[in-house]
Amino acid sequence: MDDELIDILNEDLTIQKTCPKSYAHMHGLLHASVHIWFYTSNGEVLLQRRVKTKIAFPSLWDISVAGHINSGENKYKAAIREVKEEIGLTIFKKELTYIGIFKEYFEHTSTFIDNEIHYLFLCNLSLEIEQLNIQVEELSELKLISIAEFQKELNLVSAKKKYVPHQQNYYKIILSEISKLI
Image (cartoon, rainbow, N blue to C red; front, side):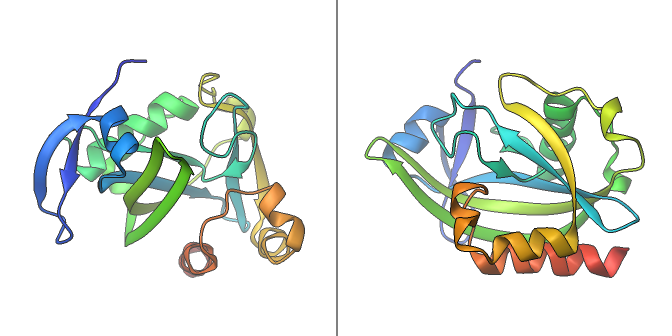
């Protein structure tokens, strides 16, 4: 995959400059991503398992779909593009429920630092998981898990070996907002 150009942000989220994604990660520069959480009407969330070759959190379960916002792209276009790329599903802006932003910082190695503002979206999954087509370069499998079971597992010490270690408040916000929609 090409080294996409992304916008580097100031703390007030205005654009400071544009650079390759690899440069932003190498220097820990603040940039934006989209997180799209799919849920079902019967209280399940869709999770993806990251491929084992990823630098960041290989083989761990994570957000349904996530990705960087390319330079000049708005958060909705990025979300729609990432959903199509990662799980082969065509969605429209009206299907996305935007719930806000969340800032996270992860230092994976001394030359790979994620300093991101995540634009958070929810989207109802109205088809069977078997109808989704995964992007094998990014994820190895998908699964549905009930919100109750997911919350229970996140509270276990072993969760750090199974799930991407987003802040507890991050997961709390996501699951609370999904619960309001089902």
